[in-house]
Image: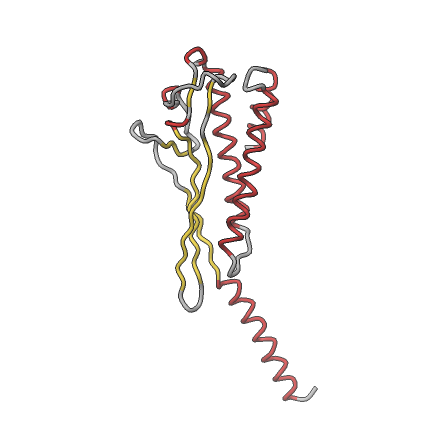
Length: 192
């Protein structure tokens, strides 16, 4: 290979490396998790490692038509924003795992510690799925379709959450099968 060909190949290789590096740095992801301390005045409880639900948090009127004793309304969500300049786009994703007091209820005859532990595990399962979403989001390869990619990932983990919550209630019969409840608690504790 003569010098000119070698120079052209070197320039070509350098341009490929530069484009690859630029493409990797073009979309930068920042993940922020909302963690707020418990407040009696707030309708929303954000999950933290020290979050323990109390029966007073179940503020909605109980639905007497439902066969189960309590209802936990928990979930996780995200919102995003982006800031761009000519070189890159910084995408900030804010994630929250929450419990809504005004949509959660308990029947008067079911306010025991055992029943509360069943409802707490619902909230903890929600937090675990939120963490799975966050971990996968951190390793997501982003391009110009980042909003769609993020949303598709969220839908995947939210659908898994709904299926897991249904499985939990079916296998424990909403906490009535104490042996299955204990099994779920052990299984959950062993993976966290």
